[in-house]
Length: 126
Image 1 (cartoon, one colour):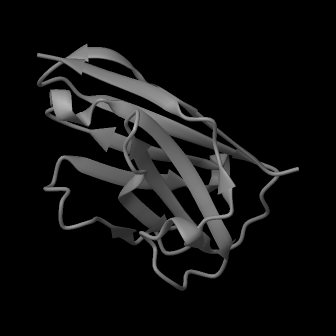
Image 2 (image 1 turned 45 degrees about the vertical axis):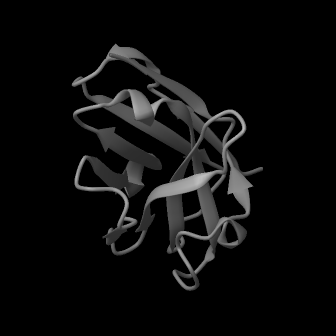
């Protein structure tokens, strides 16, 4: 059974950095999109980055200006989201998600992703 488990969130001061982790279990090695999304209470779930797990090519929304770095390590089935210079507006629940085999479709669309983790909370204070 495939499962995604996020970790690495926490309460930090503005200007700090965090590295969120996403552990994939039950996945065979297949090229697919893996993305990180975030959501605030009452807000929409928005993409902050995606990666094609085979090539490692990352994609970022235009709204994300260089503070987020997504990566993956296939031998350990891990994926990461590095967030630098954290701001209070980055406070949200962060989720990783995987799409079907093959890196195709809109990598920032919620509908592309079939499997989701339970999320890890990031809280940034000023």
